[in-house]
Image (cartoon, rainbow, N blue to C red; front, side):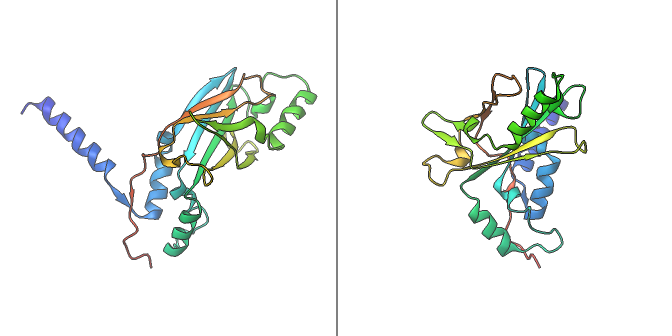
Length: 206
């Protein structure tokens, strides 16, 4: 076997091993944040940089659980309550400013108009479109970073409990038809969720 073949074989062995790895819940949360770039997409819209980040329900279910006092039953209950949910985050930024809301404008009136829009839960402007359905946003939160991060976030949740669609195999588009930034509408494709390592719940969590 040539050196080239050895290198290729080693790559695929490593690749498939990583794909098949099994992680305990806290390890899974750490793995997600270390590999969050694999769960994101970035686009430019009329001078604004927008990043879409998907947060799997396994990670969301761990948010309220302490690393040092992990409770398996609490985690399983959280996971069951979130099984029909999809959690997405839109991160907004713009070149030359820490506050994307003041990009490309000159007056305080324009700034306040943008701020009020994002603070006001523009539910009618946000939805997921599939071939057969339009799923409205179920939860919205505008999170300001106070210049602690290079972006500001819109946190979104979609509820599929009354839909025949499979949230894990979902194929569609996220639409945010905002009316204050001049982007012409923000759209990201959504793909089936299959990037997490296998979750291992068969262990002693004491």
